[in-house]
Length: 172
Image (cartoon, rainbow, N blue to C red; front, side, top):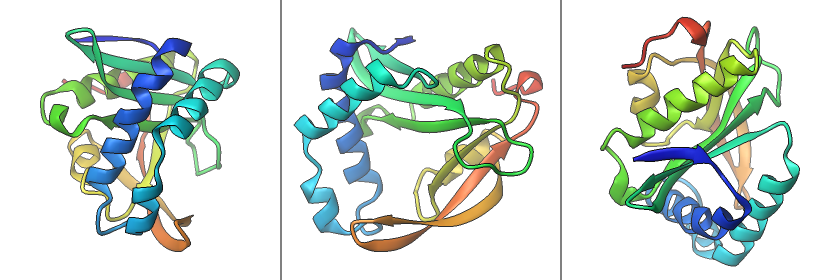
């Protein structure tokens, strides 16, 4: 497995991973019509834009056998919560690549990137019903905030998991 910064050429490979992950994780949570409407070309264009214009975000891809199977992005916190200054914006893996240690490696890589950028306390927002919340708990995250996000015309409860002093954390 290899983790590296995303390039513009990666956008068309990140998009299908992003969509497949959403469709697998959020079935029965996010309105099905919204999941069905996710469009690979639109996602690829969004990722091209993020990769080229989001200067405050760090975006990484995970590759296995030279194929992108996951990605993560992070940077300064977008919505202030307590002491947190860094945020894991997204972390997704292709459904068939989950539970192989790749997500943990991406997570640790992102945490180190935030520390290198002098961001010491990380959080991430996720849907309350996200089946991956156990992953965040196993990594030592605790719920530090709650909110609501509108997706597909529905208001869905969200929670933020937080990690303080990430430079001193041991996730291995």
